[in-house]
Image (tube, rainbow, N blue to C red; front, side):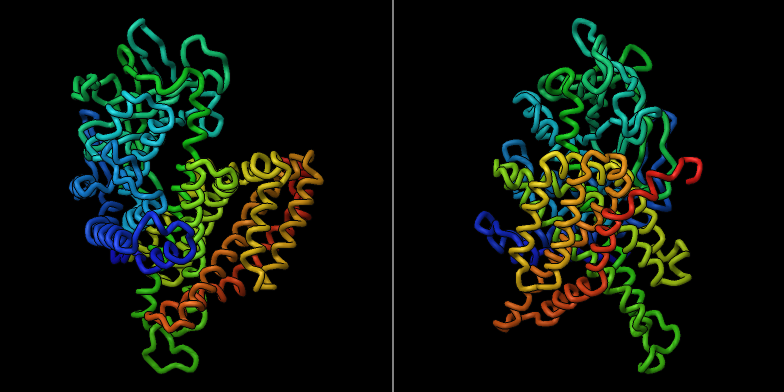
Length: 569
């Protein structure tokens, strides 16, 4: 697959839409982005399509053989120090700001989403250790994880327990010396593979005698191979991968069914305090859901590039007012679809990178940034992954009949994107989170503060102002009927999407303003700067009206849903 990391647009956002510039010089930004982009283009993208055709295999000894070339690519990634881009340098991390990790992760995910999932899961377990691990645990695990010598997983879901984790059956029993874990977990991304010498599983389990419900759940670190206090690998733990899922997409990513404790019980090490597993998981979910939203943006860029490339070479029909032999990009509707793909993708990229900076400030203790981070996370995850469905499907459409043929690769991109609205909390869960926990819980304070920020930064654009007013009225309506929770749950998705489109317009217009400034001082790369203006103008004309469409449904559309009998759906 031909893939080119969108370095130029990344740099434009980092240098023009973010506030934090003093901690990184342009030379460092250039070096990091160029090297990361080169690695993605040359090492990961060529494996993307072949991995889909040659998925991992589970051997008779319960070991997994990954797709050809993947093991070697991971070794190169780890050797280059790319696993812990924003991790603490005291534990072998690069120590770069989180916004740089977000930028680099786009390139990994865009070039090869199946491959890059391993990195995301490893980052998740590093976040958990950073959050609640002891100094000894951090010293033992983090350097190995940052250097890619070990990798990590997250084990939540069970056959009978998906969204409702209070129903998990995995048990942890203390035998006087060790915690012994027994149970089965499903949908474990990279639960077994041949990339690293050890795999550290982060597992939710109920301790013996713990209360029912989520208060009885604790978090355990369960290594594939036991480790002594010096980090030396010992015998294999009592766990194994008993099957790999056959999936619609991300086929090169091994999704394992993991069995713990078929014999004496898998030895696990409690992370943090007993009974606080769900609490820890929810804190980590912020990062996980941000990463999934990032995946939605990244794979949209992949689809956009492939569609653009095809449209420049495919000749079909004679576009109006064009010469015979003009490629299909000359057709008005094809050009419209390409601009749609670009505008949506650029809006997502701006949301991701601006939010990464907000998360940095939140981590440093800024109160407003903490509130804003919590409010934006469900929008990032929900809105971006919904847009990815549209963008990748449009990519297939531009390919025409060839898009429906697997050999072109357009269909694979669409299939791979389909998981994004589902995992790490479905988008229905994101919408309810935004409605009930992020809006009603503080009586709309954070929502109104965000709208004030948007209003202040777009005061030159009277068109956006009317959309902001409509959003304010919608939130007031929500607060007025806050006790009608069933009704609100029926329109929470539209609330999330309406806000997403409005936020996208805010950031696209900030981008347009900066592009105009640079054009006025005669900066180089005029065509690139003009393209930012085109993207913003297209967004406001073709995409922003969707905001009112969704928000008007919030005010008027719940009754027909919640009053419909289940038998009539």
